Image (cartoon, rainbow, N blue to C red; front, side, top):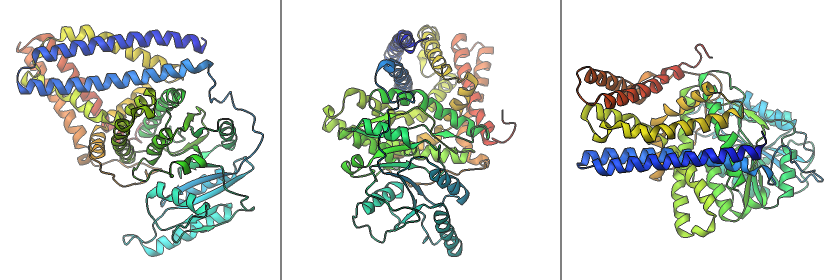
Length: 542
């Protein structure tokens, strides 16, 4: 089926989905207004209404991104099939900032940099490791530093160091200042290249320490950047090469797939793509224009993207796997990664709101919408717990009381859920993803709700947090005590289901209401029980 035809069919489905969302929220609001009389009803009903509204708003945002991606089929796009001819080879800096990363991972990454086929590249290893921390063994740290020197010399990579500050963003900013002959205290650049640099690099390509680019990574990106001079950056996907390592790695990779397959395409079609911090090419002129990477956030890439767009620069996404790396392989590593992303993203929501109030006309409505969706995404943890607790409240306290009339709920909820699930599964099936695969990613995100709650609360309060690398390679089960929110809520849901069945047996309440809320308790118990499935990811990996 032609992509334009699919876009029209999808638009019809999206319209139907929007109508179902509208009528469901209308019915929910009417029930809330009609039933809320005492403070318990008001609080429970309002929280549920907000949670459901949040879910539907973000579902609509996802479907809208899919539509924009499909509708852009006949527009000039940055795709693997529209790469322009590259007539010149401007100098490019290949950059990786590393904080005490394992040496074997660094060697693989730097070797891939060396094998890049672009002729006018200069490779820079930014050693951001702190060698002066009292807790570290001085002898071991001196040995690590010497091995970094030896590795860069053997492969032919330029080595940059300076006193630690500002984590990754501060390191790259100091590096750019140093290349521009600006004073950077106690900074040093040791050149191990075979040939000298001929001038300032026009483009900067940034990788994480575990991301390995394919040999032809640079050429198509430079070609697009040369053709479109207002592009600040082009983002490419992150692909986890340890996808089949175990359950956590697979589920984490599937979450990345949902984001990079459609959401990024839709954002790019609206010139609202944001930088993801690795596998990205940036125009040095644009970085200088916005004062470098934003050092106030642990997600400096997302924060800097807002600066680019506020200053009139454009962005784009190339949906082509150009590099591969390693995702987290256990819950500890995954939770650490998600906490950092959630903290930085929600923290930027304050800046987004502030900039909108100061000048709403500085960005088109579509871009504000996309930044709002991205900035609020990680409130999903609060949404999950509200959804899980409300059926428990009804079964144990009959609050909210309008749960006693689920026939109206089903009348409006079923069309919504059927349409949205169908649209989602259909869109992902077009990229060869099945229901079982997607389910694993959804489960892993659901059991991360305590992490999202903590991170989003700190982020909205302005707590910056600290940077920490995501552990790579191998997996370790977390102690059960660290999973008490997930397992405790799972037991509560099991208790709610049991109590609901007892009430049904004794005819203590409307049967349909008891069945419905007991069913939701069983549903959430099943989701939360998957915590044990993911905490022992090496066993019977499917």
